[in-house]
Image (tube, rainbow, N blue to C red; front, side, top):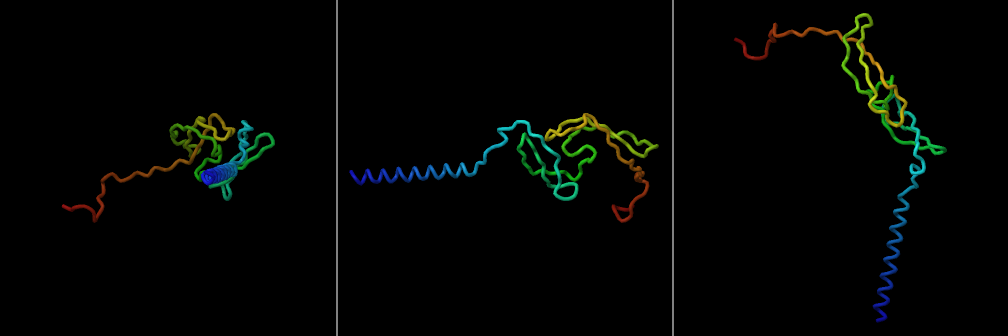
Length: 147
């Protein structure tokens, strides 16, 4: 009877040590969440690590707390209105011959990270000269069957 009691006691101690070790592991992996304390984070612009696009860092602040998060600036973003402002654009207008540009307007669809965005914007680009393509008038030599 004494041996049965000793075995049960040893098993109980081993079980308690295992449970305590797993609890410490969980607590070690978790950092205190500062986000829960603050609800009004103010995010800055994404600043690329090198150049004007690619991976970078965005700073956020709330009260006296600050944090840095990883971000990415697409390399095809429009610098006039930033990468955090997403717009829905209409069709390109016809080419304006006086300025040599064509334009289109966009309305704000989404502002990421509380970015300050314009509600509507207008963008323009140079007109591309249209070169007429030959329409079957000439036959290319060396391809297909000849009569």
